Length: 465
Image (tube, rainbow, N blue to C red):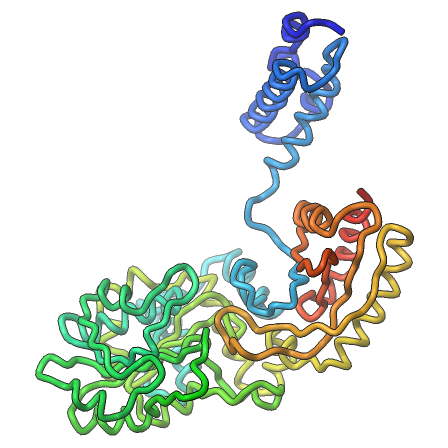
């Protein structure tokens, strides 16, 4: 074996390496090819210095192949499609709600051309981007007016700032939530210049707690739906209607953040009864905020509905421009909301609602058919069985609700479940699954039907190591 000095001298220059046929003919950006080549040569140099390989000569073709592998990784887009096999419907790490085909088409139509984003086609004069969704939201919720911003955290910040900046907002201690990304209600209030006035206790808050907190600097009564956790047992909270009555009596507006937000009752899916947006409007709440990309099943957005005077304050506030949504989000949101004009159409077309509405026996039939195909393809590489496995909604919605169903459990014969999961994440179309007791669990509730063949191929390759 040659010594390390002789081997280091044989390492090719970057220019020479780039002349190798597969690299010379590559259509990838030149800067990425050079970067991949430098990394491949450096990797080989480090191996020689560490005496981690036994070489007699440097193989330039092998280094070129390593360069190509690195280049293939570099030219992949960072943000791309992933197959969600976890069974968590609104998986925040995986982008939450997938959009309907019609919403995707709407994005494509608007993205490929100019649009009437802020043009009134009737008068030919400048219009307003809210006009594309405000009537829809009012029709669906019964509200007097509506607005939309980039996400629900933005909606809460804007609403608090517009209605109560420099004043106190009275809120129950049991509703001072923290959700994903360290989003804390007290911090958002502070950012909006609103003074937090806590009342009640963690588990119990009464109407008189709010009433006793009122003073000359009270600007808002705030109610926050605890969508990402539950306080059970010895607990009590104040109903929205009672807070509205107190607010009207003292001429103080009432705001409620619904978190996920529901446009119609989902209890027919076997889910627990949750307040709908329309019920909040009918209770007389001045302003309600909720998410677009959770149970609504649309794009990321913060929806705001309520009394016209409150929405006017929202629209005219300087923050509204900073938090506004773009044309692509608006196109997807409008289309998603139009699905809800017909309840059955929403259930049929909005993917999240389809997943919520999937019965356990329907999921089992689909899983049995998928398992038969998978067993044929995977042969001796893994053992595959069907097990009982509940899905969850995720995204901070319905935290104590499980969706009964099943999942495929794969036990790889030549690799570990962890190794299999890693290879799945590095597939051409990445797959994210769960590991339980050294078995890989694949839950089809969150796998789109068009992804099944790609998923089978990825599983076969991942279990082949």
